[in-house]
Every structure is written in C-alpha cells, then in structure tokens.
Amino acid sequence: MSEPVNTFEAQQQGRPTGPLVQGYEVIIGFETHSQLSTESKIFSRASTAFGAEPNTQACAVDLALPGTLPVMNKGAVERAIKLGLALGSTIAPRSVFARKNYFYPDLPKGYQISQFEIPVVQGGSVSFFLGEEQKTVRLVRAHLEEDAGKSLHENFIGQSGIDLNRAGTPLLEIVTEPDMRSTAEAVAYARELHKIVTWIGICDGNMQEGSFRCDANVSVRKPGQPLGTRREIKNLNSFKFMQQAIDYEIRWQIEEIEDGRAIQQATVLFNPDTGETRAMRTKEDAADYRYFPDPDLPPLAIAPEWVERVRAEMPELPRAMAERYVTTHGLSAYDADQLTQSLALAHYFDAAVAAGAAPKLASNWITGEIARRLNAQDLAIDQAPVTSAQLARLVVRIGDETISNNAARQVFDALWTGDGDDVDAVIEAKGLKQMRDTGALEAIVDGVLATNQKNIDEYRAGKDKAFNALVGQVMKASQGKANPAQVNALLKAKLG
Ligand code: ADP
Ligand code: MG
Image (cartoon, rainbow, N blue to C red; front, side):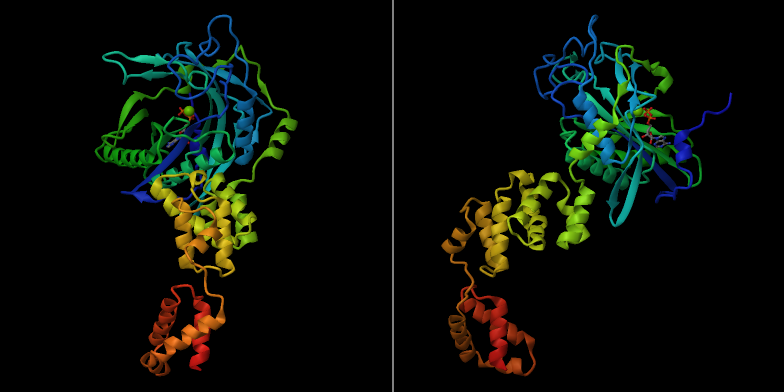
C-alpha cells in the first residue's frame, strides 16, 4: 500500500519559514466551533437559549428518539452562507449531512450529525494585521453540525450529571489550513474570526458561554522538514488561555523531541490553574467514526438566488469600512482599524459624524478618552454613558472654538459621570466658554504686559520661554477662557 497523501502537507509547499523557537518552526491550524445565533436548534424547534434548567430544552428530535425526523433549520444555513460570503469561500450548491458515530455520555443517540465529505462552505481565507504585517490564513472548509450535550461534574458529590439542553445546538465548524506560524499569529487569527462572526451577526461571540470555542492544532518541525505530528488543544474559550496554552504546548513538544521522544498525535486539554496541557485521549482518525450520509436528511441544496439574496443583505465588512474611513474621512489606517474593532463601535463613530462631528476629532475622542474609560470600567460601547449625539455636540463646540480642549475634557467628564447631559448647558453652567470678545481680551493682554516687563525684555532678547510665560499669564487672568491661538496672535502683534 502506498503512503496516504497528506493534503495539509501539500498545501504548505513554498510557504515561507516562520520565526524559529529554539531552532524549531511552529505550525498551527485552527478548528473553531462557532455557535450560530438561531433561536431554535439545527434540526428541531427546541430553544437554544443559554442557562435554562438542565434537560428542559432537549426534545425528542435532539435525542433522535424512534419515530422522529430531523428538519434542517434554514436560519442556520443562511448563517453559513453569510460566513462563506464574508470570507470569499465557495458556497456548495449541494452539501451532505453525515453521521459521525462515537460513544460518549453526552451523546445518547450515539452519533453526531455533521458534514464530512461535502461541507457547505469550501475554501476562503481570513486576513488580518499582525503588527504591521498583513497575514492571510486559508480556510479548508466550514461545515454545519449539531452540538452534543454537556457532562456536569461540579454540582454532584461523587456523581456526574448530563445536561442535554445543548444537544442539537447549531454549530459552524471553521477549519483552517495549518498556515499559522506563531502563537501571536494564531491569537490574531482567532480575534479576527471572532470579529467577523459577530460583525455579520451569525454568532453572539460569547466565549464564556461557549459560543466561540477554538481547537488549536500545534506541531513543531525543523525548517524544511515535513510537517510534525500535531496535538490538538481542545475548547480554548478565552484569548488569554489560548495564548498560554499554545505557548506551553510549543515548549512541551520541543522538550519532548529534544529529549528523544516522538510526539504522539493526541487531544489535549489546557488547565488554566496549572498553565499546562494534558493529554485527554489519543486521537481518533476519521475512519474510527464510520461516517456515512445521514439517511434521514436529504442533501442540502442552496440555489444561487438564495446566495444572492443573502449577499444583498450583507453588512459592509470591517476591512471595507476601515478603507472607507481612510479615503473619505482622512483617518490613519491605524485609527480606522481601531474604529472597526466591532460593528457597534463603528456605528457609534458613524452616528457621531452624521450628527456633525469632524471625523478626525471624533475618532480621537473615541479611540482615546472613550476607549480608556470603557476599558477601565469594563463597558462595551453601547453601554457608554456619553451618546454619539453628545460626543458630536462636544466635538462641534471644540471645532467652532466655543470651548478649548481642556474645557472639553471637563464637559466630557460631566457627561460621563451624569453631572449634566446637554453639552451647551454644561458649558454654560460651568462657565467654560472661551472668550470671544477681543476688546476684553485685549484689556487682559495689556494688563499682563504692563506688569511683566522682565518677560518682555527676555522675549525681545530671543527667549521663547518668556513668550510662553506671557501666554500663561493671559490664560490665567482669563480663567482659562481665552482662546490660546488668539492670545498668541495678540501678544505677537503687541510685542512687534
Ligand atoms: P480532525 O477533525 O481530526 O482534527 P481535521 O482534518 O478536521 O482533523 O483538522 C485538522 C486541523 O489540524 C486543521 O485545522 C489543520 O490545519 C490542522 N493540522 C493538520 N496537520 C497539522 C500539523 N502537522 N500541525 C499543525 N496543525 C495541523
Ligand atoms: Mg475536525
């Protein structure tokens, strides 16, 4: 018998070598289970709501009781189409559901309905920035499948329980080529994919609740060698754990090889308490699952008209939106990227601009002060106490020189802390208006010049510091309400 062709190996031909760790190249491929945000299960009408009493949301179809038949949830298919369109994949006009047979307590029916030979989404890629460098990770496929139940060990003394509520929850498993070459690249990929699935609204992205679970396949090799044996770290549900787990796994594998032991293909779990990965089971091969087409489900047919209908409803994607911010608003690529970290954030920015805010100023406030405060208080943008309309008003008042930047910060703080909600009213109440009356300003300038001969002499002798001191005096005398540019101009004129 000839050696089986490793398709992953073939796909890696000609790709540049990644950064080395102790002389080894790291190879990573991801499988991500993205829970689709449908209200009912993938093949039944049972609810998918999270957090219900155990075993109250699994119906006879989810358990494949005799006499029941699964019926495909159109919403789940539509979400798969959306992902395919977002990632430039081929949407298979005809795909097939298969039974993946295995025994596990949380799968009483004995098989999982998945897609095997012909998945609904084929090919495509995810592009993102790793620092300054643009990376592209190719997808092999994304297939629809049902989730299994859950074993509960925590709430029992010496016993385990099974909660089947999750059985039949729709998943899209998104599989990459082993294209990633470092932990940082893998985490950046996962973040980008997370951004996309939430952006297009196919998944709520809640990692704590298990809506977005990543399996990281990791291997190492000496440069130029064939792919090494991989170990698969299961169910990484936070970006922090993802990074820790992959880093640990890389070091562990290198140490094993350096000690003369061969890596065994295995499924491993990350323990956040110890920071270590530990083998759970040796890895089954596809053949062990005895896949066969599910006789209860016809092939999934997707007409081109359906794909076009979905395409027409697709939101603008983050990359396109960021490019638009650069070309139409003159933002830097970095700022545009920051503003498109989530759809909600981009909408906030858009709304502020639509309400009259200068884009560059609005962007500075959002990526600066607002981001800082949201971060400190662990809030999402839609929980921000300052609305986009309020931000717009504030930015307009800075732009028309009603208030200085300093005053704007005070107004912003008042809005954020609930000490007022109308920008103009706060400016009024706090007396923050810049002086517009040039006559009054001139009087102040004259007063300052009359009592600061030393600074005047120093300025005339060429000391810039002396001029700044005079500006400071005027600002102080005006209680911060003078317009610094105006003060500068007046002083320069008077000093000749
Ligand atoms: P399984 O379902 O058995 O995990 P799949 O073929 O569905 O296998 O997925 C394999 C995953 O492992 C893919 O994400 C692929 O990129 C990755 N992979 C394959 N070979 C390697 C390797 N040598 N090192 C790291 N990752 C690999
Ligand atoms: Mg797999």
